[in-house]
Every structure is written in C-alpha cells, then in structure tokens.
Image (cartoon, rainbow, N blue to C red; front, side, top):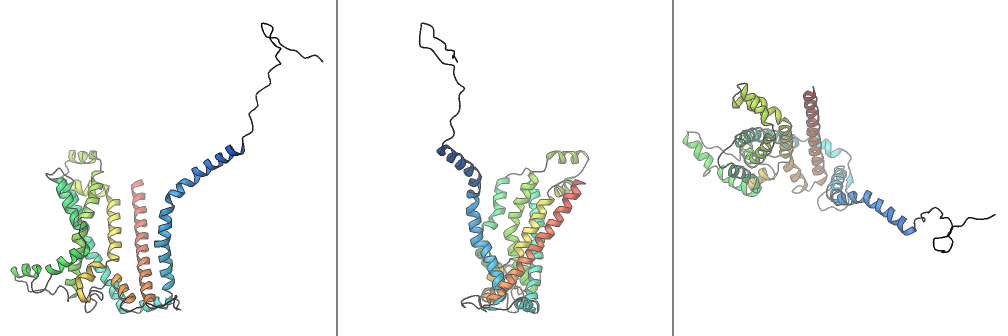
Length: 334
C-alpha cells in the first residue's frame, strides 16, 4: 500500500503527515507537589489557630475537667494523688452549709448594689459624651482611668476613705449630723463600701462601651424624632435605649459574671479578716469562701465543688441571656 508523501519547495526531503500532539503523563514529582498544595490550602488555617486551642486545652479545659474530678474526692492541700472518692458528698455538704448560703446571698446583694448604679451611671455618662463637648477626648480618657488602676491600689485608698476614726466619708457624714458608721464591722455598710469600689472601677469602662454603641445609631433617627418635636430626653428613651439594647444586655451579663467572681476588693478591704469576709462573714463572697476552704482550711475537694457551683451559676446566667436575646430578635423581626 502506497503512502503519500509531501515534498518541500526547493526539492527538500519529503515530510510525513504530522500526528496529533499527546501530553506527557504527569511525573511523580508534579503529582506530589499538587497533593502538597491541596494539603497546604486545607491545613494552613488549622495550623494558624492551633496555638489557641493548645493553650486553651492546657490552661482552660484540663483544669476545668480536673477540678470537676477533684470535687468528687476528699483531697487536702499537700496530699498526693486525687484523694478518696466521695461522690457528691462535697456538694451535699455545701447544700447543708449555712456559710455557703451566706456567701451566695452576699454575692447576690453586692452584685446588685454594684451593678445597677454602675450601669445606670455609665449610660448617663455615655449619653453626655455622645454630644459635641469641649475637651470630649480628655473626658473619654479620664473616665477610663479608674479601670486602669490596680485593684490593690484602689482598695487601699477606699479603705482609708471608709475608715472609722479618720475616714473622709465619716467626716462628711458628721457635717450633716450623722454619727460615725463602722464600714467594716457592719454588714450592709461593708457591702455598700465594697460595691462602691467596684462601681468606681468599672463605670468608665461600661460608659465607653455604651458610647461606641451610641455612635453607631443612625443620625436619621434623631432627626426624625426632632422633627416630631421630641426632646432630648424623649430621644434618649425612645431612640437611644432601644437601639443599644443588645449592648445593654451584654454589659448586664458581663457585670453579673464579674460580680459572681468578686474576690480582690472584699479581701483587701477586710485586711486581716479579708479571707473570711469579716469577723462574722458579713461580706464573704463565693470566691472568698472557695479560697478559705482550699487554702487556709486545706479542703481542696470542697473548694473545687464551690468552683463548679460558680460555673453552673455562670452557665445559668448565660442561658438566661440567650433566651432574652432570642426574644428580642423575634420582637424586632415582628
């Protein structure tokens, strides 16, 4: 069978018909690079966040689980191992302990006394700073100064202010004919004094959070309210408060969590009896009660049980916050 050939111009050598081009199969090296590239795309994000989860597992999750395990045992400070198994005996002893319920009541009352005035004053300060004022930047920095002050320094200053004999607060009360108040020995004066420290430290911090939320409110809402004849007070009630409601709910939850963990202020305020929350436990919080059980009394099992009770209380607060937030979203959606 004859095959056709083509001759080139000028009498060159004949050329055979060209065959279609076929790509060479990928080499093993290029295939390995492709797989490595795909692995890099998938694994790199996890590598970036791995340090956080490693630190959380080592310093957050493991202590939490281990504390729960210790709460089911009888373990004393300095004792090796996990101690003797007690089951829920440490929790039942807390249920029957009058000191535990006293600490829970004190935590609740001081939380209310410190949180309510704190958030109300923070809301008012944020509303004032939201307007065009001279030196507005200075005032914003100034209200944050108490938050930057250490707990120890603030508590020691307020101990001097609330002193019985030479305290400035009793001196001022004497100008109005009111007798001296023993701010450390009596229950309610002591709780009011400690709550004053908390309020002083955290009001400016919450005010800046409210201020940031207020600045995100659209100005058209205020213009429409002003055209309708609403005063600044009515604008604050009917425009500002509903617009920053999620932020208010957030600060309430965070302040409640902080009140549940109240430790440094009452301990430093009480001085030598700060661990016990006063001579009669009149201002002992759950954190102080846990510390007293774990270190001075060396009962780590019962202290761990108190820690887990505090955790359950915080989870309950978070659940209530989630329910309220969902109800607000449904109301806004409707």
